[in-house]
Length: 366
Image (cartoon, rainbow, N blue to C red):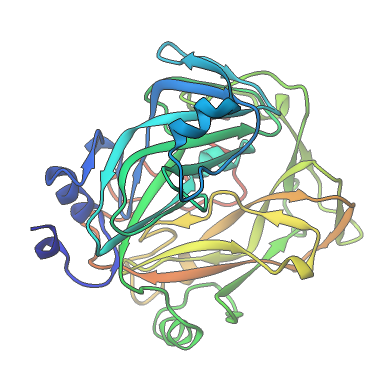
C-alpha cells in the first residue's frame, strides 16, 4: 500500500511524510513538526551519558552496545537535563521507523542546533554510518549529542535534528544543475558549478560585523527558549578585517555568512556539503539541509537567486591555525529533486526562522 503513495523518485514532501505517518511507517511523530521536506525529530525521556561516540556496527543493536560497557549513566530527561560541553550523550528519539524497501532516510542537525555548536548525529540499530538510514529499515532512532562550545539544557520533546526521506536517485549532476540555474538563477552572481553549487565566505563589506566568534565558559543555553539570550554574552562580533582575511584559531567556533545569496526552488531541496579537505584545514556547516522555498521569490520576473538568503556558515578550524580570505570557496550545495512540490514552502505559513537571512545567529538569541 505504501508504494501507491509514492509519486516518483525524489525527496518526499511534507504531505507524503504525513501520509507515511498515517500508514504507520513513521510512529511516534508529531504533525506539528513537519517541514516542507523534512520532519523534526524529538527527544524521548530516555538518555545515557556514554564513554565515547560509537556506531553499533551491522552485527549489533544500540542497546547491545550500551549494555556492553559504553554507557556511563542512564538519565531521565523528562523534566530537563544539562548536556555538558565536551561530553557525549545518546538519547532515544520518540519516532520509530518501518520503512518500505523503496524508501531510505538521512538526517541533519537543525540549523539552530548547528549554530550553537552542538554536534548531533542520528544512530540506528545495526548502523554502519551516522545520519544514514538504509531502505527498509525497521527499528528505533537515537540521537548522539555532543555540545562543543556551550552546555545546553534539553528535555523530552526538544528537537535537535531532522529526518528526510527519499525514493530513488534524486541528486542533480552538474549538467542538470547548470540547466536549472540557467532557467532559474540559484545565486545572485556567477554560479560556480563543479560537484555542486559553490559558496564562498564573506569577510568584507560595509557591515560593522562580518561574523561572530564563540566565547568559551559562557552560560547555559536552553534549546527550547527563543529570543531569550543576549548574543554578546556568548559571541564576540568580528569587524571587517583590513587585511581581507581572518585567522581561524584551532578548536574555536565561528559563525560567518556566504557571499552569495542563494535560493532553492519549490521543486528542489538542497544540502550543504564540505569542500575537499585538501582545500583547507577547517570544517563548515554541521546543519546543511535547505527546504524547498528557502530564499525563493515567487516573482518569476525577479528570479529566485536575486531574492535569496545568505548561507550561514558554521566554521571550525582543525589542528592548525588557518587563514580564511574574503571570497574563498568554503562549501558546495548539492540540489535534489522533490518527488512532489510541498503543499507549503519554507517561509510560507510555517515557522521559518531563517528565511531572508543575512548573517544571523540561532533563534535562541535576541
